[in-house]
Amino acid sequence: MSTIDIGIKETDRVAVADGLKNLLADTYTLYLQTHNFHWNVTGPMFRELHLMFEEHYTEMGQAVDDIAERIRTLDVVAPGTYKEFAKLSSVKEVDNIPQGPEMVDILTHGHEQVVKTCRAALKTAQDADDESSASLISDRMRIHEKTAWMLRALNK
Image (cartoon, rainbow, N blue to C red; front, side, top):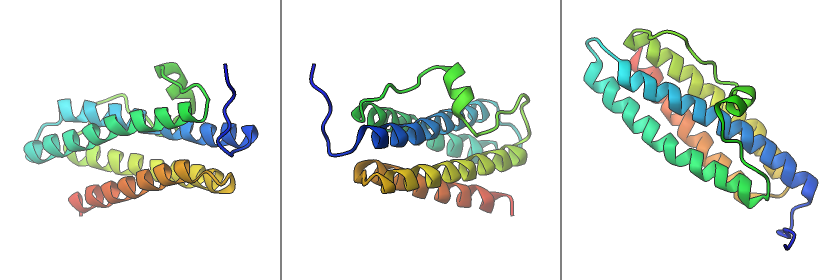
């Protein structure tokens, strides 16, 4: 078995992977919440929200795979259980099914929280000179910022 040698010190790889684990947990939690709202939205904005939520969870479904694979590329085990995600995620879950406008607010805050997680993980990746992780995190941050903006616009 060969050891990994990609020009990033082991301590830096682990630190970057830890930030990516938080991003993975946040993204998966938000994915699940968005999917839940997609299934359960009702009311006058049903069609628009149902379709928008589907676009969002589909995009995040691919993102969780990209993030997990980057963690593995750094030679760290990616978390993959609800229990692990619950410990690592900063996105707050909801226990009820809110009305459409409240769903939009909850998801807006969720995307904003993922942006904050991205910012912390990005700094760690930049400090480690890990351009590949920084690029992935930066791309995720841009997507979540834009999604939060679009969601905020719905409830103005």
